[in-house]
Length: 298
Image 1 (spheres, one colour):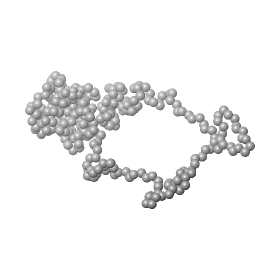
Image 2 (cartoon, rainbow, N blue to C red):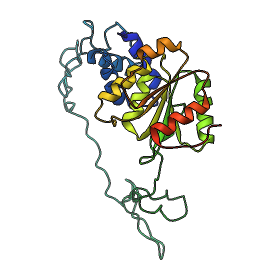
Image 3 (cartoon, rainbow, N blue to C red):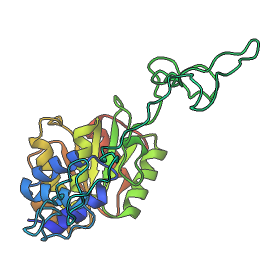
Image 4 (tube, one colour):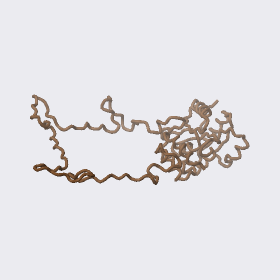
């Protein structure tokens, strides 16, 4: 079970790529207690907070500051006795604000303004109208974009790194591996063959990707650091209501063949096992068997 420091480090690593709510839901699904996840989120939102220490404003020494009572208008300051008024003097009273001039009226002490022929008398300042949603800014030329067009990319489409969010309605192959060299090699080979590819760095990210997009295939490593192995991710996907039960998975691992065969499900007809270095001919055959897509990888 990961401790609080590990959960904090994980949220800080991926909060720029995924919404905090999605990370919280995924961590709870991974078996992390909700109370630990919520405490980690509070620590991430309060950069000066140290794990294990009380959050700011929650310790026993934190007491609401109290303001001293304000003296009544005209009353003497604290520590002074009542003032003695001289004959004919006026007792002090609350300060008053001078009246504001009406819109367009001349400043105090000035006479009425003389308007030149054809000029427009000054009036109250007005705010410029706000452009309609999707319209170009006032300084930008050209007509507004047509209806249904994307004005600005979504947050997920702007994410950097190996994790990406493809457009809805398009099927992709998801590559899951903590080794960037292996990811780059698989991506280059599959994209050169004409496949659309997206990537994840660990098992937790692969579950988030699979539940949020349409995939035709997952090619995943088994042993990865973080929250579970590739086989653990497969079990969660098979139990998820957001992923189709026949989503095919090809495990590509550097584990010894006998050890890998012990943990990879043998009764799942939509699972295949490959060993590193990758046999491209066998990978092409497995893709054709599981998805029906047959593009040359040789």
